[in-house]
Image (cartoon, rainbow, N blue to C red; front, side, top):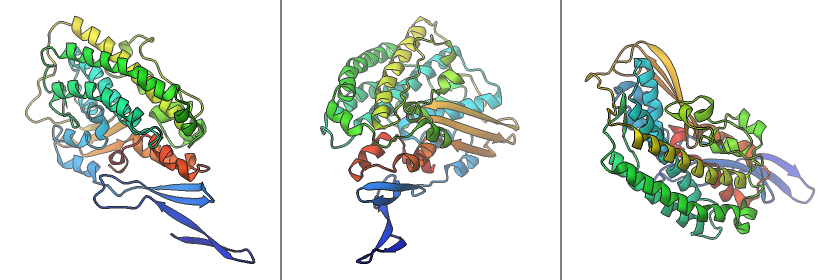
Length: 381
């Protein structure tokens, strides 16, 4: 605790103090510290303290070639490995002037949405801990396994997929995979009924998340918040619609819907998450329809053994599950990037805790943090 101000009341000298939450431990896989000022049992101010996991990924990019850097790109947000790989290969492909095969475009779109469902379900699994323990978490994790199985079948990995490569995908989709993916999407859709009921019809859950850590639209915009947190605060933004890439521009408007809320509290954030899962499943089904009707063809472009991006710079961004994920790439014509700067969604989302937490009751802090969707590796990079 750090003493800031001493006030004499005539009977007892009191001092405002900064409360550090939580404690640090070197064995933790990623830690966010909050420096809190409290009055009674309510937060007066909150200062997120980051950097405990800093790995220097942006400098590591500069000493690895354009194939090797993918292993770094899919690790800063390990819940969105496919989406993070995708943003990087899109930047490199733009520099090289590569147009990937149509089959790869639609397959990437499908896999990206399946990865989005995986990420959203994981955050739902940790929603509002202590409220009906196990019910929402068990339902979300059970639904997640269906998608996890087909992602593993396609890529060979459960977490760090390494399925994207510059020019397309590293291998074609396995025989029978489209049918397996359709079954998985159908299974998750069936389970979404119970997930939706636990969020929309469970008054215990709703009363425990309503008006908790409210972030209004102005504050969300000022902090550069994107993704479901921004949309729960009333910001109608989604790069899939506003700056489309892959096959998103070819999706029907009835499928490519953007879910928003106006309240900006923990409940609104969870409502957005549940509805966005439904949207991603609809997009996935549309992609499956297109891929099933598409004739066999290449899944990637053949590249030379050594890839050298021409001298210049570009910026590519994608709508990752947690928000806008951007790569600013500068090349000097070498086999490695001269500079590669990351814009991660979690970094901005965490900063907005300073605006959302004041006024929050201490008993609701865990609920508030669980509803602010972030991955520490995505913050510290």
